[in-house]
Image 1 (cartoon, helix red, strand yellow):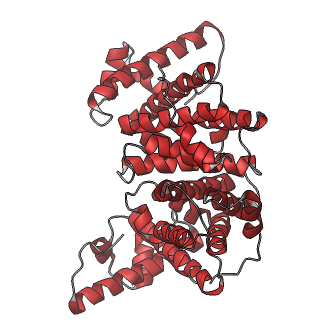
Image 2: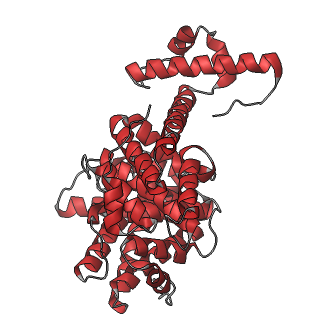
Length: 210
Length: 210
């Protein structure tokens, strides 16, 4: 959630700093105790912010939990962006991002459910966060003739939906530990790679991300 | 939502009849006034059921609204099933189902959002309702060698997610009136049809469903 206003100057900076302190405190406490057991009082105490000030930034505990999740997804996306620095092949860049997303989802269910529950709700999903990155990586692969699709928009929406559905399947136990590579292979095939090659690229050694 | 218990005999039958009357009344009133403006009292009055009995069947207005939506999705699936009676090609059967789902979504946003918000939440999505039908239609296409995928489970999850994401894109206005055919083409390609053929099959005349 963006700050409610976008003022400038010292007051604005301080406001953003307070908000960041609240989000950082909420992230730490929620990671330790879960959202349900975290109280707003604990968040403001840990952030060293007056209890009442909380409501200048967030309407509810759920709202700050959403901000925590959005930041976690954004920070995942920023880390995944660095894959492109070490991998030449756009198909492998996309495969590595997909694999890391599915791995992260299995390791952090709250993160995964937040992603699933918000991604399709927003009109701007392909213009922000991990959706924007997916659209960009597909565009690069198309420009470099690595991907071949007749309908880039439909293929991009489909790829995003496919990743979400496989993540959900992973969380439900419908698909096993090899879900990351299987998701990457199916997405690459959707983007026009021959099936054999899609599977091969999806299994290349996976560079770690921060 | 299934009845809370599955008793047998006359009492059970009457119980199911009462529940069905409540759902039918809720569907009529909600279709006319929206969920928000519908009261439980109106539903029980229209169904000719005592107010208190409502709670033998549903916890809340939201719970009966969910039952209305589930029935609407089930009845859509049953209607789409009849496509297989008049179409020989399994790829065309699947394309027609996808197109009808996207058309229906654009015509009935409440139905579409319910589908989007519940499909990935459930562990049993591929074993019930429209998810089970999707899995079945893909299986038939594979058996008849019309589809060709290395990983049927991943492809089925991906196809489901792709359809949901394109429906969401349609509701958000990200993709236009030709979304049904574009969704069908991308799903057929995902299932191994060559791109040209996927597009061609996706544009065949669309039989209506009840």
